[in-house]
Length: 636
Image (cartoon, rainbow, N blue to C red; front, side):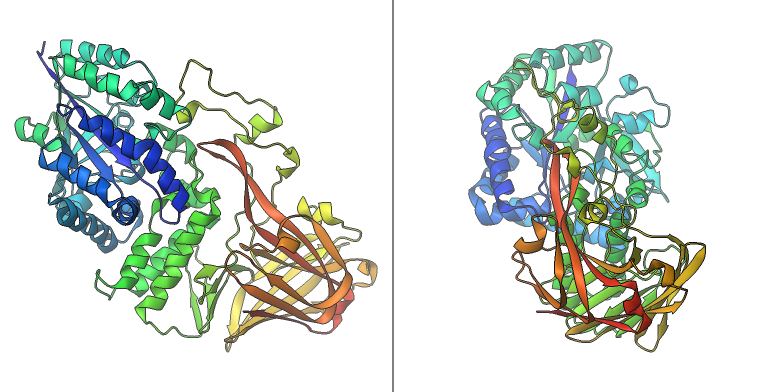
């Protein structure tokens, strides 16, 4: 039986690149500031704090006095600051030199602003892969924190874990502290005494140390927690209760390492915390399978990283790249992430800015297997635009360089398991006398279930199809407008600086063959379509459709469903978010169907509807393809 137990606490605070200034401000007022105010009143409490780069930069600009308070806590030995990737990337999803540079940037920032040398690092989303010891060791980091569920994944009993462990890769090692999931659900959602009772049991069984590591936002920012943690004084009472227990000592991680040897060795697989494993079907990289939009962002990031690898890490282009590596926009759990279009937009914006800042001059056409599926994608490049064309002849990224915006960044509407809560019309909130973990909330903010629609193809642009006769607006909105089944799609191919695609569609036991081409100038993006073969006499009532999905907002087309029934040859889309104007002009009169693309996703506030973009479907009678149809697009 031991006479004391060490409680090792790490509080992680983060706001992603691209988040709204008002969110930073609200989080500061409700969580970051009051936590430090309480900590200052309890000088005997020692712990580790981790603030990510985006948050530190916001604090430096908007609340510099807060950084001085943190520095004071560091100077008196009450707080140990943790390093990590500066812009909170998933380290193992980066090229190694980027991962090391991200940690180095944080190490240098902590040294410059707080005059401290970081010895430990926080892992974004506690994503562990076997290369982590090598990366951390090379970056000069001695220890990190993971969940006890990481250890359970290799058969370890979580209730037997004590202190810290050693792991290595290629002979380079780091120390690993397992944080208790039980404490994550106790703090701050249970009375302080329940945590104390749990620690007493551990101490009486001879355990030396137990680790708690979790988000700082759960102390005040998560729903219902501000009242409980601060107005009803949970945190003050918790710290005071610990101070009153002579058998509990709070210590920093580095201090504990200095006086205690490792408990043992451990090799961990690819793993994260339990909830993340549920969201990702057991492995974080599965997000890139479930969500092709995530995969494309990730592979686009790697492409830029390779292109500018020759630059020094201090170059402005590298900082834009590192910003684009912030993990939040790449995945989806209870925290919105991928479903928040402003976070995805921030990723693309910084990647475009990185390319521009690098000074690289790209060839007008690039063909490469960008997403590593074994088939080449083709990139058309001009001074003002980048157009990324898939091997099946659609545009999956469309960059307007002057605004640093991917204007075709629209998320596909797809089924999520929590949608069944809406279909069952069941929702519940917190009871008046209980504060719930964010993982246990079940709140719906969706009032109209008709928004719950699912797409049968990805939300890309320049998507061509044949529309069944008589299709109305609701058919388009519900993706019930297609006529015939796709028989074949040939890989996109190049002839000079022009990209071609060719596909066949089964209609009435025969194949209708369509050919489409793309070309790009400085101010103009041209699409040509023609009918190669097939008897269309039996489908005279059908239309040819060309669909564009824009991550933009025009009051006329983005707020409701509609159809322009008066024939037009030219249409302007005038975006009010970025100030982008797009002119669509065709060689033949067209009609157009339009509607907002909205998704239903889960966030820390509950299940809610999110505007993703605007869908425009241009329509011509099928006979218009007997001659070549020209469709010209200009950005301004």
